[in-house]
Length: 285
Image (cartoon, rainbow, N blue to C red; front, side, top):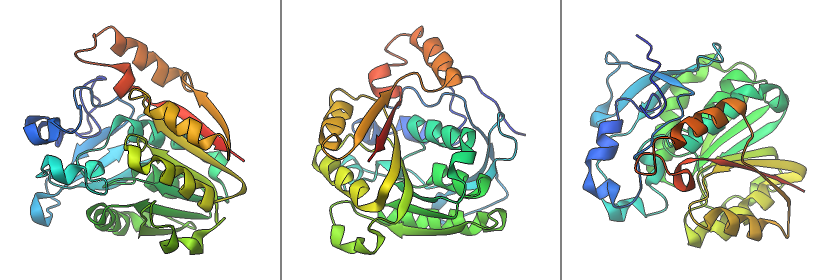
């Protein structure tokens, strides 16, 4: 049965929410009080077993019925030290910014037609990139993360959903932003870069700007969703401004904005917009 929970009850990660929140080790590294804006729905697939306690679910979107993909979630046995490796936080669960980015890509599917797309820091699912590959007429999609476990999981997800991808060329690749020499072959290759909630690590923020600069074509666009998290979003924008025109939009979608306003009434102990509400950043040459 497909479930459509209310905002605040996690439809993006229903069967992993308990695992995400019950661990003190995970809580010490990230705040998970608020889980979703209720834009996507999941249906747990108990008949689809996976080694290592990994679990599968069907993801759908009530607003875009053509979207239906099978996604594998990794088990969440991580220590705090593992979470701050070359970012393992994307292996914990699907964060709200990735949910919003996925919804944004579905809503703006036409803008990806015949485009080459790269998702940076897509975590264990690269959910937005998968949505682009399945539901748009993109020419090419590259799904990337800097964590080996994430990349391996995305490869499994891609294999499961390949029959739903028609003409789009799609691949998965490990891409570490601070190792430019490993992706020089992608210089100026992409029309559009997408990314969600990847601005919080101080030591990788400049590397992210540099990587986007390398990947994009001269008239390319990057679409990034991330919460403010103190000064982290503004710090990223300051680093990006010498190379890009930077636009920051808080009210980019009426439905998301409405859910945001509803959650504000719950109080900061449940929903803190500084760490939970994704702002949209657009970088253009």
